[in-house]
Image (tube, rainbow, N blue to C red; front, side, top):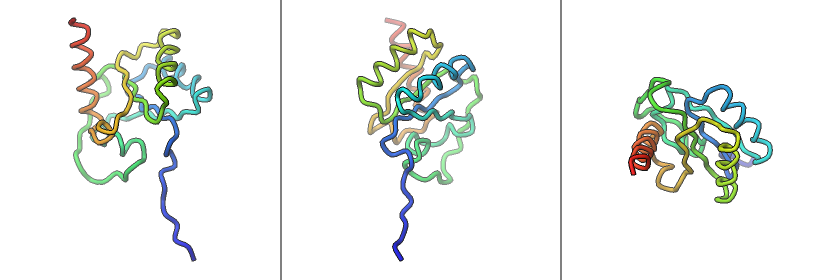
Length: 134
């Protein structure tokens, strides 16, 4: 018998990690899913202590940091993974055209895959504050 190795079902699939989205904005994002071949995963407050890689299903979730955030602790955010750069830019442009109220937006990098999601949100919020302060 051959051994079956569990593989990440989302490997290479464009994914959006969504935080604290209003129902209308979630609908806008879901409406774009087929066009981009993407999956939208809502990150629950209790999952904020997981790494981005864990949320993407790239590594198993194990007992570790137990960070939970209140739903309103951070503004709405999306984090894109496995997107080609031009597809990510197109998605961001379409969200702007649809007037989606998602102020925090990022794409996953090799470094941020290892970040705890709550820490990534805090960093995105800090960078947003720095940009608007200029």
